[in-house]
Image (cartoon, rainbow, N blue to C red; front, top):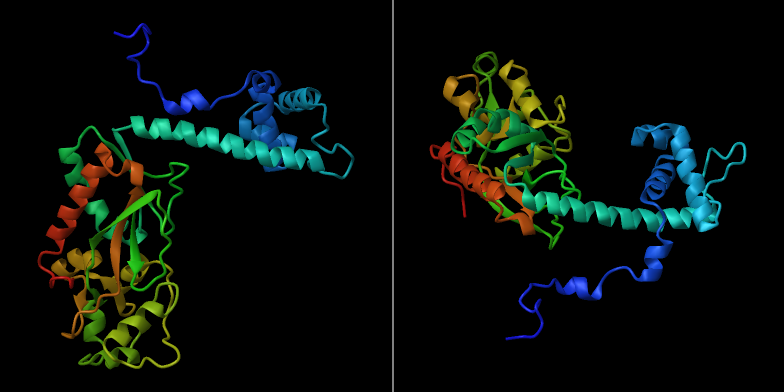
Length: 333
């Protein structure tokens, strides 16, 4: 038996080698002064900092003076017309201080993230969120009634370092450049075919569409540009010419809304229009070869991949999408 009564305790190796020295602790200024100075430098003034910190601007001024006295350095230029800009020494100090505070914030958020197994924040492509997920999420909650779920439509990824979301459900266009981040983990969820869809009324009021090239003579609805239609035509060996005209809506779910109202022909992956096709609001034109332009991907932090909420939602998502697409032509390998 060891003579050391603490020999059986688990010790974090980092705690042995890391930490502040006595001298560093003695020079460390009060945290309130640091917090105030970071806000001043980041937001560009004492009053803006006070508003962000929800305190009186006089309190921020006192914290700034205290920090300047502590460091023996003028950190903010108080000359008229300076706008309260940082001095050269203040800018250097602010840069280093902000990096240290960001690390403190990230470390704290990591602890909160690891301990939270009852909430789930998902950022999701707007079209999928509105056209499919909003009508299915209740099925997930039936089996997971204790989980609080928050869905934010977004076509830009969240900042996982800042814990903006637990996961991101997004659509990756084929051959798009990918940035590898070792802190993240991504898996393929579904690769649905992309269909040309139109309202029955629009179809009845226009000449028959017997081949893909016939679509070029009608009104085509675009997202932000004609790129999706151009790639769709290319898969069917159709030369679309130098420009494909038609109104632009910037989001896929908006092109679908316009198509339902008889405004033209829209492109949509099958997952987004299953209900519309089943209920007759839209019809798919043509009996041509299926076109695949991209894949839905599920991304989360690598260290949170096996967390309860992430894992349960991912498994449910895979099964729910597979079930929804069960009547659609099998996706290619």
